Length: 350
Figure 1 (spheres, one colour):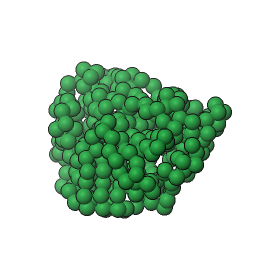
Figure 2: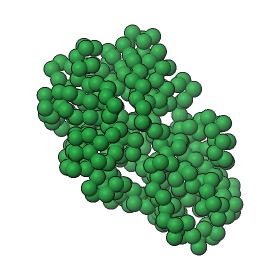
Figure 3: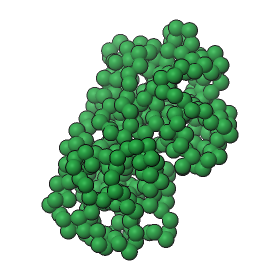
Figure 4: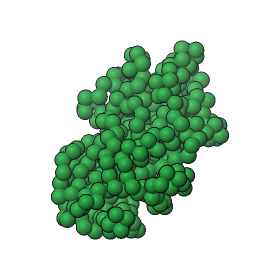
Protein backbone atom coordinates (compact mmCIF):
# COMPACT_ATOMS: atom_id res chain seq x y z
CA UNK A 1 0.00 0.00 0.00
CA UNK A 2 2.85 2.40 0.83
CA UNK A 3 4.35 2.13 -2.66
CA UNK A 4 0.96 2.60 -4.35
CA UNK A 5 0.27 5.69 -2.25
CA UNK A 6 3.70 7.12 -3.07
CA UNK A 7 2.95 6.65 -6.75
CA UNK A 8 -0.51 8.19 -6.37
CA UNK A 9 0.74 11.43 -4.78
CA UNK A 10 4.30 12.71 -4.89
CA UNK A 11 6.06 15.81 -3.56
CA UNK A 12 7.36 18.25 -6.17
CA UNK A 13 8.75 21.81 -5.96
CA UNK A 14 5.23 23.05 -6.73
CA UNK A 15 3.69 20.91 -3.97
CA UNK A 16 1.76 17.64 -3.89
CA UNK A 17 1.31 16.18 -7.40
CA UNK A 18 -0.88 13.33 -8.66
CA UNK A 19 0.72 11.90 -11.84
CA UNK A 20 -2.25 9.67 -12.67
CA UNK A 21 -4.57 12.67 -12.66
CA UNK A 22 -1.98 15.24 -13.78
CA UNK A 23 -2.95 17.77 -11.11
CA UNK A 24 -1.47 19.41 -8.02
CA UNK A 25 -3.21 19.89 -4.67
CA UNK A 26 -2.85 23.41 -3.20
CA UNK A 27 0.24 24.13 -5.31
CA UNK A 28 2.59 26.84 -4.09
CA UNK A 29 3.44 28.01 -7.60
CA UNK A 30 1.35 28.39 -10.78
CA UNK A 31 0.62 25.03 -12.44
CA UNK A 32 -1.57 23.86 -15.30
CA UNK A 33 -4.19 22.13 -13.13
CA UNK A 34 -4.79 22.75 -9.41
CA UNK A 35 -7.24 21.28 -6.92
CA UNK A 36 -7.65 23.74 -4.06
CA UNK A 37 -8.84 22.85 -0.56
CA UNK A 38 -9.81 26.35 0.64
CA UNK A 39 -9.41 30.07 0.07
CA UNK A 40 -6.51 31.04 2.37
CA UNK A 41 -3.68 32.46 0.29
CA UNK A 42 -1.07 29.89 1.36
CA UNK A 43 -3.28 27.25 -0.28
CA UNK A 44 -5.19 29.19 -2.94
CA UNK A 45 -2.88 31.09 -5.25
CA UNK A 46 -3.68 32.84 -8.51
CA UNK A 47 -2.16 32.16 -11.91
CA UNK A 48 -3.08 28.49 -12.42
CA UNK A 49 -4.29 27.30 -15.81
CA UNK A 50 -7.28 25.48 -14.32
CA UNK A 51 -8.63 25.44 -10.77
CA UNK A 52 -11.09 22.98 -9.28
CA UNK A 53 -12.56 23.88 -5.88
CA UNK A 54 -15.89 24.25 -4.14
CA UNK A 55 -18.19 27.04 -5.32
CA UNK A 56 -17.49 29.07 -2.18
CA UNK A 57 -13.72 28.73 -2.54
CA UNK A 58 -13.87 29.82 -6.18
CA UNK A 59 -15.89 32.88 -5.15
CA UNK A 60 -13.43 33.70 -2.36
CA UNK A 61 -10.52 33.46 -4.80
CA UNK A 62 -12.33 35.80 -7.20
CA UNK A 63 -12.95 38.29 -4.39
CA UNK A 64 -9.32 38.23 -3.35
CA UNK A 65 -7.57 38.03 -6.73
CA UNK A 66 -10.12 39.19 -9.30
CA UNK A 67 -12.33 37.23 -11.67
CA UNK A 68 -9.36 36.27 -13.87
CA UNK A 69 -7.45 34.51 -11.06
CA UNK A 70 -7.20 31.36 -13.22
CA UNK A 71 -7.45 30.44 -16.89
CA UNK A 72 -10.51 28.26 -16.20
CA UNK A 73 -12.43 27.02 -13.16
CA UNK A 74 -14.51 23.99 -12.27
CA UNK A 75 -16.89 23.73 -9.33
CA UNK A 76 -16.44 20.72 -7.07
CA UNK A 77 -19.73 19.56 -5.58
CA UNK A 78 -19.24 18.15 -2.09
CA UNK A 79 -19.62 14.38 -2.06
CA UNK A 80 -19.68 14.03 -5.84
CA UNK A 81 -17.12 11.59 -7.31
CA UNK A 82 -15.36 12.93 -10.42
CA UNK A 83 -12.90 11.15 -12.68
CA UNK A 84 -9.74 13.11 -13.46
CA UNK A 85 -7.39 11.16 -15.68
CA UNK A 86 -6.98 7.73 -14.11
CA UNK A 87 -8.12 8.64 -10.59
CA UNK A 88 -11.41 9.37 -8.85
CA UNK A 89 -11.63 12.59 -6.83
CA UNK A 90 -14.14 13.68 -4.16
CA UNK A 91 -14.34 16.88 -2.12
CA UNK A 92 -15.55 16.41 1.48
CA UNK A 93 -16.14 19.12 4.16
CA UNK A 94 -13.08 20.06 6.23
CA UNK A 95 -14.66 22.42 8.79
CA UNK A 96 -11.89 25.03 8.43
CA UNK A 97 -13.63 28.00 6.77
CA UNK A 98 -16.56 28.52 4.41
CA UNK A 99 -16.10 26.25 1.39
CA UNK A 100 -13.14 24.35 2.82
CA UNK A 101 -12.77 20.72 1.78
CA UNK A 102 -10.65 17.64 2.12
CA UNK A 103 -9.69 16.05 -1.19
CA UNK A 104 -10.13 12.30 -1.56
CA UNK A 105 -8.06 10.64 -4.31
CA UNK A 106 -8.73 7.00 -5.26
CA UNK A 107 -7.15 4.59 -7.68
CA UNK A 108 -7.80 0.87 -7.58
CA UNK A 109 -7.93 -0.20 -3.95
CA UNK A 110 -5.92 2.75 -2.66
CA UNK A 111 -7.74 5.73 -1.11
CA UNK A 112 -5.75 8.77 -0.03
CA UNK A 113 -7.16 11.84 1.73
CA UNK A 114 -5.54 15.29 1.75
CA UNK A 115 -7.00 17.12 4.74
CA UNK A 116 -5.97 20.65 3.85
CA UNK A 117 -6.49 22.78 6.98
CA UNK A 118 -9.27 21.49 9.23
CA UNK A 119 -10.81 21.71 12.67
CA UNK A 120 -13.33 19.83 14.77
CA UNK A 121 -14.48 22.74 16.96
CA UNK A 122 -17.84 24.49 16.80
CA UNK A 123 -18.23 26.88 13.87
CA UNK A 124 -21.66 28.12 12.72
CA UNK A 125 -20.17 29.57 9.52
CA UNK A 126 -19.12 26.40 7.70
CA UNK A 127 -19.91 22.71 7.33
CA UNK A 128 -18.26 20.45 9.93
CA UNK A 129 -15.32 18.15 9.23
CA UNK A 130 -16.31 14.68 8.02
CA UNK A 131 -13.86 11.83 8.73
CA UNK A 132 -13.24 9.74 5.60
CA UNK A 133 -12.07 6.11 5.95
CA UNK A 134 -8.86 5.80 3.96
CA UNK A 135 -5.56 4.00 3.54
CA UNK A 136 -3.39 7.13 3.72
CA UNK A 137 -4.28 10.35 5.52
CA UNK A 138 -2.30 13.53 4.84
CA UNK A 139 -2.88 15.78 7.81
CA UNK A 140 -1.80 19.28 8.77
CA UNK A 141 -0.21 19.72 12.21
CA UNK A 142 -0.33 23.45 12.93
CA UNK A 143 -0.99 22.74 16.61
CA UNK A 144 0.56 19.28 16.67
CA UNK A 145 1.98 19.34 20.19
CA UNK A 146 0.32 17.96 23.35
CA UNK A 147 0.52 21.41 24.99
CA UNK A 148 -2.09 22.69 22.54
CA UNK A 149 -5.54 21.87 23.84
CA UNK A 150 -8.07 24.47 22.76
CA UNK A 151 -10.77 25.54 25.25
CA UNK A 152 -14.45 25.81 24.39
CA UNK A 153 -14.95 28.73 22.01
CA UNK A 154 -18.12 29.93 23.73
CA UNK A 155 -16.13 30.41 26.92
CA UNK A 156 -13.59 32.53 25.04
CA UNK A 157 -16.36 34.65 23.54
CA UNK A 158 -17.81 35.10 27.03
CA UNK A 159 -14.40 36.42 28.17
CA UNK A 160 -14.69 39.11 25.50
CA UNK A 161 -18.27 40.00 26.45
CA UNK A 162 -17.39 40.12 30.15
CA UNK A 163 -14.56 42.54 29.40
CA UNK A 164 -16.98 44.73 27.45
CA UNK A 165 -19.32 44.74 30.46
CA UNK A 166 -16.54 45.55 32.91
CA UNK A 167 -14.97 48.27 30.74
CA UNK A 168 -17.88 50.01 28.97
CA UNK A 169 -15.77 53.11 28.42
CA UNK A 170 -13.17 51.21 26.34
CA UNK A 171 -13.30 49.97 22.75
CA UNK A 172 -12.34 46.33 22.27
CA UNK A 173 -10.15 45.86 19.19
CA UNK A 174 -10.11 42.18 18.21
CA UNK A 175 -7.43 40.99 15.78
CA UNK A 176 -8.82 38.18 13.65
CA UNK A 177 -7.86 36.71 10.31
CA UNK A 178 -9.96 38.32 7.55
CA UNK A 179 -11.21 35.04 6.06
CA UNK A 180 -13.00 32.64 8.36
CA UNK A 181 -11.83 33.66 11.82
CA UNK A 182 -13.45 37.11 11.75
CA UNK A 183 -16.79 35.76 10.56
CA UNK A 184 -16.66 32.92 13.07
CA UNK A 185 -16.10 35.37 15.93
CA UNK A 186 -19.03 37.50 14.72
CA UNK A 187 -21.30 34.47 14.51
CA UNK A 188 -20.31 33.22 17.96
CA UNK A 189 -20.95 36.67 19.42
CA UNK A 190 -24.44 36.65 17.90
CA UNK A 191 -25.14 33.18 19.26
CA UNK A 192 -24.03 34.41 22.70
CA UNK A 193 -26.75 37.09 22.51
CA UNK A 194 -24.66 40.12 21.54
CA UNK A 195 -26.95 42.27 19.36
CA UNK A 196 -24.96 45.50 19.07
CA UNK A 197 -23.18 46.50 15.84
CA UNK A 198 -19.85 44.74 15.33
CA UNK A 199 -17.56 47.27 13.71
CA UNK A 200 -15.20 46.26 10.92
CA UNK A 201 -11.84 47.39 9.60
CA UNK A 202 -12.12 47.96 5.85
CA UNK A 203 -10.09 44.81 5.12
CA UNK A 204 -12.95 42.71 6.56
CA UNK A 205 -15.76 44.14 4.45
CA UNK A 206 -15.80 42.19 1.19
CA UNK A 207 -15.39 38.73 2.69
CA UNK A 208 -17.91 39.45 5.45
CA UNK A 209 -20.34 40.62 2.77
CA UNK A 210 -19.83 37.33 0.94
CA UNK A 211 -20.57 35.32 4.08
CA UNK A 212 -23.81 37.28 4.46
CA UNK A 213 -24.71 36.59 0.83
CA UNK A 214 -24.31 32.90 1.65
CA UNK A 215 -27.02 33.23 4.30
CA UNK A 216 -24.82 33.31 7.39
CA UNK A 217 -26.43 35.68 9.94
CA UNK A 218 -23.79 38.08 11.21
CA UNK A 219 -26.03 40.99 12.15
CA UNK A 220 -25.11 44.64 11.70
CA UNK A 221 -21.44 45.04 10.73
CA UNK A 222 -20.71 48.68 9.82
CA UNK A 223 -17.33 49.75 8.56
CA UNK A 224 -15.25 51.94 10.84
CA UNK A 225 -15.00 55.50 9.54
CA UNK A 226 -11.93 57.42 10.69
CA UNK A 227 -13.93 60.32 12.09
CA UNK A 228 -16.06 58.00 14.26
CA UNK A 229 -13.32 56.06 16.02
CA UNK A 230 -13.17 58.32 19.04
CA UNK A 231 -16.89 57.83 19.73
CA UNK A 232 -16.88 54.03 19.81
CA UNK A 233 -16.81 53.53 23.57
CA UNK A 234 -17.82 50.01 24.54
CA UNK A 235 -17.76 48.83 20.92
CA UNK A 236 -16.35 45.58 19.57
CA UNK A 237 -14.18 46.19 16.51
CA UNK A 238 -12.69 43.46 14.31
CA UNK A 239 -9.51 44.09 12.35
CA UNK A 240 -6.59 42.17 10.78
CA UNK A 241 -4.06 41.00 13.40
CA UNK A 242 -1.42 43.47 12.23
CA UNK A 243 -3.78 46.42 12.83
CA UNK A 244 -4.12 45.95 16.61
CA UNK A 245 -0.67 47.52 17.07
CA UNK A 246 -1.03 50.16 14.36
CA UNK A 247 -1.79 53.85 14.75
CA UNK A 248 -5.23 52.94 13.37
CA UNK A 249 -6.11 51.14 16.61
CA UNK A 250 -4.82 53.86 18.92
CA UNK A 251 -7.48 56.31 17.75
CA UNK A 252 -10.20 54.37 19.62
CA UNK A 253 -11.19 55.22 23.22
CA UNK A 254 -8.64 53.54 25.55
CA UNK A 255 -8.55 50.42 23.33
CA UNK A 256 -8.36 46.89 24.72
CA UNK A 257 -6.15 44.88 22.37
CA UNK A 258 -7.55 41.38 21.87
CA UNK A 259 -6.44 38.64 19.49
CA UNK A 260 -8.42 35.53 18.44
CA UNK A 261 -5.95 32.74 17.67
CA UNK A 262 -4.91 29.31 18.81
CA UNK A 263 -1.47 30.79 19.40
CA UNK A 264 -2.87 32.79 22.29
CA UNK A 265 -2.33 29.63 24.34
CA UNK A 266 1.33 30.74 24.34
CA UNK A 267 1.47 33.61 26.82
CA UNK A 268 4.82 34.83 25.57
CA UNK A 269 3.36 35.32 22.10
CA UNK A 270 0.44 37.30 23.50
CA UNK A 271 2.82 39.55 25.43
CA UNK A 272 5.05 39.96 22.39
CA UNK A 273 2.13 41.21 20.36
CA UNK A 274 0.91 43.54 23.09
CA UNK A 275 -2.33 41.61 23.54
CA UNK A 276 -4.24 42.51 26.68
CA UNK A 277 -7.09 40.06 26.10
CA UNK A 278 -5.95 36.79 24.47
CA UNK A 279 -8.81 34.73 23.00
CA UNK A 280 -7.91 31.11 22.25
CA UNK A 281 -10.11 30.59 19.21
CA UNK A 282 -8.52 28.42 16.54
CA UNK A 283 -9.58 27.29 13.08
CA UNK A 284 -7.18 24.35 13.32
CA UNK A 285 -7.35 21.12 15.33
CA UNK A 286 -5.63 20.95 18.68
CA UNK A 287 -3.53 17.93 19.67
CA UNK A 288 -6.45 15.80 20.87
CA UNK A 289 -8.52 16.46 17.74
CA UNK A 290 -5.59 15.70 15.44
CA UNK A 291 -5.09 12.35 17.15
CA UNK A 292 -8.81 11.61 17.18
CA UNK A 293 -9.16 12.44 13.51
CA UNK A 294 -6.30 10.17 12.52
CA UNK A 295 -7.84 7.26 14.42
CA UNK A 296 -11.29 7.90 12.94
CA UNK A 297 -9.95 7.61 9.38
CA UNK A 298 -8.56 4.16 10.15
CA UNK A 299 -5.54 5.04 8.00
CA UNK A 300 -2.64 2.59 8.00
CA UNK A 301 -0.29 5.38 6.99
CA UNK A 302 -0.20 9.10 7.88
CA UNK A 303 1.79 11.84 6.19
CA UNK A 304 2.16 15.01 8.26
CA UNK A 305 2.49 18.44 6.67
CA UNK A 306 3.16 22.04 7.71
CA UNK A 307 3.27 22.46 11.44
CA UNK A 308 4.61 20.45 14.39
CA UNK A 309 5.30 17.39 12.28
CA UNK A 310 7.72 15.36 14.38
CA UNK A 311 5.54 15.01 17.48
CA UNK A 312 2.55 13.74 15.51
CA UNK A 313 4.73 11.37 13.49
CA UNK A 314 6.10 9.96 16.76
CA UNK A 315 2.56 9.57 18.15
CA UNK A 316 1.50 7.63 15.05
CA UNK A 317 4.55 5.36 15.08
CA UNK A 318 4.02 4.59 18.78
CA UNK A 319 0.57 3.23 17.85
CA UNK A 320 1.76 1.11 14.95
CA UNK A 321 0.64 3.59 12.26
CA UNK A 322 3.25 4.15 9.55
CA UNK A 323 4.00 7.84 9.38
CA UNK A 324 6.39 10.38 7.90
CA UNK A 325 6.81 14.16 7.79
CA UNK A 326 6.51 15.84 4.40
CA UNK A 327 8.47 18.99 5.35
CA UNK A 328 6.53 21.09 2.87
CA UNK A 329 7.64 24.71 2.65
CA UNK A 330 5.60 27.71 1.60
CA UNK A 331 2.55 27.23 3.80
CA UNK A 332 2.19 30.13 6.20
CA UNK A 333 0.27 30.37 9.43
CA UNK A 334 -2.78 32.55 9.05
CA UNK A 335 -3.61 31.85 12.70
CA UNK A 336 -0.90 33.99 14.17
CA UNK A 337 0.79 36.21 11.63
CA UNK A 338 -1.13 36.29 8.37
CA UNK A 339 -0.14 39.82 7.42
CA UNK A 340 0.88 38.74 3.95
CA UNK A 341 -2.67 37.59 3.28
CA UNK A 342 -4.48 40.66 4.53
CA UNK A 343 -6.08 43.23 2.27
CA UNK A 344 -4.83 46.67 3.23
CA UNK A 345 -7.46 49.21 4.14
CA UNK A 346 -7.59 52.15 1.72
CA UNK A 347 -5.63 55.13 3.02
CA UNK A 348 -8.70 57.35 2.97
CA UNK A 349 -10.30 55.22 5.66
CA UNK A 350 -7.25 54.90 7.89
